[in-house]
Image (cartoon, rainbow, N blue to C red; front, side):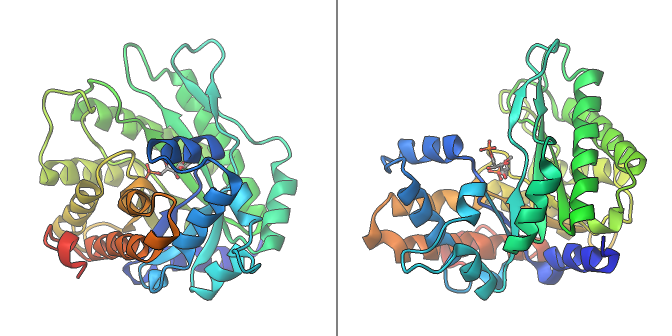
Length: 342
Ligand code: 5MM
């Protein structure tokens, strides 16, 4: 493990007010999103979509790293250039999703455990040789009657820590992603309590597995009320709760926190990130950044809809959402930016 290289990569991922673009949807997830828009669910269409993204002019001004799926990292542009080459040319660091998905957890109805540790050391070696410099693993925690259980939190935290240790051994910065889901009637206070417990457990296991905290990025959920909760707090209340929770549970040695959007609208995700950076300026030890998939991609995908003629307009929409999120990192985002992009 080259410690300094890992630290440099982790810092670069959150430098210059940039953030990450998650474009690592597995084929079933990508196909589901395509199906809603009438886009063919083929390898070629998935390639075309990812090519559109990584060739967006100016994307590297706002995006520091792109998280790919195994199929994508092996794909080439229509002209034969490897996609990974196009990403590097744009000044973007290549990342790779390495978990093999969240599966039903035995003995724990309604809960999931993320798999993918078997053979991971060899897969990481290959991804590093291909040019990847960071990786991602997502644990999924659902809230509901009697859940999450301690067993589910512990098992997922241990898997995340073992994955992170293997990544650092291979020279890849691990993105540690615990997602407390938005689905449900739970309150913001309940999300806070569960998120804090999950994060504290994860950092305990990262310590046990000897993971160097300066060489990771945390990718958590924001602290939010459930989608079906009667009370939906304001943007500022969400920002305050999220940062308070993170201050309690995330060590200062971690260089960056890059939120997932989790199904929030692009506008809301930007507004909440903006409020965090504005209200807590200089009072948090880590960078507060983004690692959004839907909150960056969705409007562009709707415009593209699988048609070559729409590529340029879709790229414009993609860049606009990326710019809004870069502004949110500076506390300079406003709803007006959604129209002007600046
Ligand atoms: C939570 O999902 C991650 C962030 O995306 P959003 O900002 O849209 O919430 C995302 O990276 C996710 O892990 C990938 O899309 C992979 O998802 P699947 O379910 O296909 O493994």
